[in-house]
Amino acid sequence: MDELPRTVDVVVIGGGPVGENAAARAVRGGLRTVLVEHERLGGECSYWACVPSKALLRPGNALAAARRVPGVPSDGRIDEHAVFARRDAFVSHWDDGGQLEWAEGAGVTIVRGRARLSGEREVTVNGGAVLRATQAVVVCTGSAPVIPDVEGLADVPVWTSRDATSASRVPESLAVLGGGVVGVEMAQAWARLGARVDLLVRGDRLLARMPRFAGEAVAEGLRADGVRVRLGVDAQRVSVVGEGVRIDLDGGEPVTAERLLVATGRRPATTDLGVEQVGLTPGRPLAVDDTGLVSGVDGRWLYAAGDVTGRAPVTHQGKYAARVVGDVVAARARGEQVCPEPWTHHAATADHHAVTQVVFTDPEVATVGLAEPAEPAHRAVELDIAVSGSSLHADGYEGRARLVVDTDREVVLGATFVGQDVAELLHAATIAVVGQVPLRRLWHAVPAFPTISEVWLRLLEEYGL
Image 1 (cartoon, helix red, strand yellow):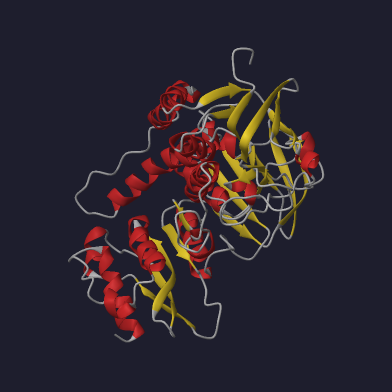
Image 2 (cartoon, helix red, strand yellow):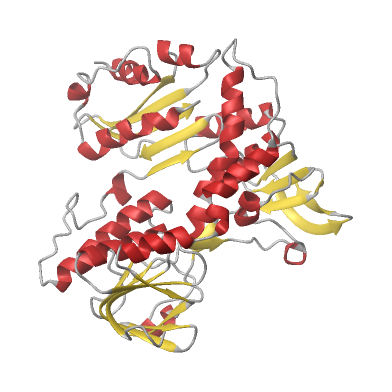
């Protein structure tokens, strides 16, 4: 810290993809910017979440896809050592040297250490050196796993999502607590790598925030891979048994496994951030407006983006919000008027209307915008994906698609696709939602034959065009 400037224009706390984007945009706007990170540059997504989880899932999905096309050699088993080696390559063997090189090349000054807010426009690093920001402090600290209050759980070695995506040995058996995205993805990845998997879910379905048909399709896919999907069970007690763990359940027989993955959600990482120094409550999300300005703080200097805000907790939406924040801070520093009207350059409007997410299981789930009708004028148009393109794509192709339509304006408000490789359908739906493209104009967007995208034609016909 001695050789670094103590006063800069912008301090960004958190060097994951969200913080990197905020810092890079601030620099592009002409601001001297310091980014503080206490672990690896690139953050959770690059080393322990999005990237390694997809690397673990892809081989099993590819093998399953090959088995659905007659004539393709697909009798072998997955080589877990090759899978782990490929995963390790994608996470750069947990070395962030490449990210550091990128940041420095972009003009961002990197400070290694744990940052805490210590006053207005002031950040203390590692409890000592103080950085002062003339323009803004931007918080991009992401989220942390939620560990439920279950008897004995604190005394048992468990996997969190980080362990599940970075392990390099297949356990004989794995119990997964939680039926959200992390739970279902890791259950399938490790089952296809050879583990015996029990998925334990308190509710009556998987992926509870998505349409029921999505969770049901994923559950069927998991069961086909040998996963025991147990719904309506609640962990009451966890204990060590031999070399593994035992989970006693309210609503079912106990489960014993070599490893226990706790995947019961995440919370904004504000507990050890010093937010109380500026009048905010530790452990709570940082509420922001569409420019990223944090509410409840005097002055226009504290901003936040990504999971820490609780708005749209997926990496790509956080990066989008970070780009907005960086541009807003730079514009205000130049004395320019910021216009936060919807769909303008200085407003993260998509967080309200067009959040995108993909669950990379087999079948995949891809969603944008509304999953269910929310008003009387909304209508759900839903059908099976049964088109020439899907039939050629895989024998016995099973999938489902839903559009949520505003019948007054005749525009798409949301879409959900379930099936093999449907993630590639999502961006067309996102453009339709963001662009508010009238259905009668979409009718003229002719899908190529034979592709799975033909389902767009069938959905519009089902609507009545």
